[in-house]
Amino acid sequence: MFYGLQMWWLDFKGTFYRCFIEDNRWQYLTKGLGNTLLITFFSLIIGVVLGVVVAIIRSSYDKTEKEMRPGFGKAILSIANFICKIYLTVIRGTPVVVQLLLGVFVIFMFMGDITVACIVFGVNSGAYVAEIVRSGIMSIDNGQFEAGRSLGFNYVQTMQHIVLPQAFKNVLPSLANEFIVLIKETSVAGYAGVIDLTKGGEIIRGRTFEAFMPLIAVAIIYLALVLFFTFLIGKLERRLRNSER
Image (tube, rainbow, N blue to C red; front, side, top):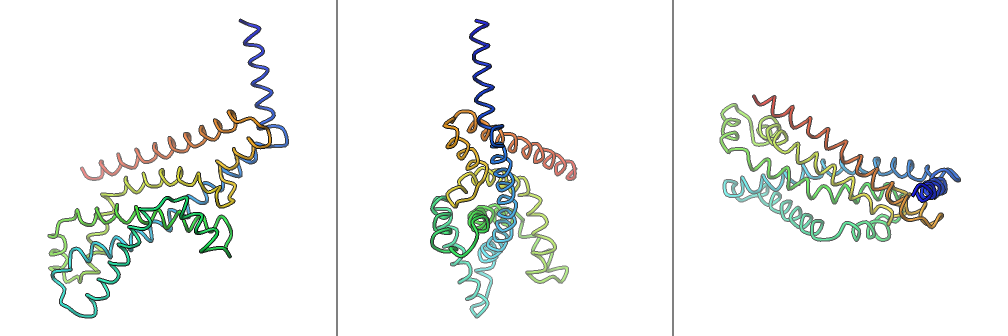
């Protein structure tokens, strides 16, 4: 039994050396991790900005459609709402891998791979952020809008100073969870030629013909990232609950 454990340990050490130490192959994972976090960060920024704009348009249309008088303003809002509905339907109804391939080989051929990945994942995330923020806005009682009018605010000022701060506070944990989901979704960025964390593990596997150790390492790193950000989200949620007391 001791001899078997000794042989297993020697085999483990040899595999570990070939996968990570030899030719500094561990750098594929560190470079991939950096690209994964970079893509996630900028995709989240794009997604939040785009999602908030779409959510405001959609919720404004739902709340003011019956009250608005026919005219140029209502026509513009109706067209914008129609475009937003198409955007949500297409993005949420198609796989992110297909969107990524279209972005790389059809729409953004002149851009760098990482830039294209940030745009595609940002646009994809924006569709889900839009629904999260819209649900937060729609959950705010209409009395808040009436309170804004009583203070002399117009619709835009009421949305900016009264509704959106409350809505963001309600949906902030959901937005944080979208960030975690986005981290895992970027694992398909290798289709765009980006050396992300998953692609780094695949490169090691292709050069050493060892599948278990590099892929397990990738899975452990993703798990560590998710656990870390989940911990931060938990602290954020507790702080929000305490601030409401």
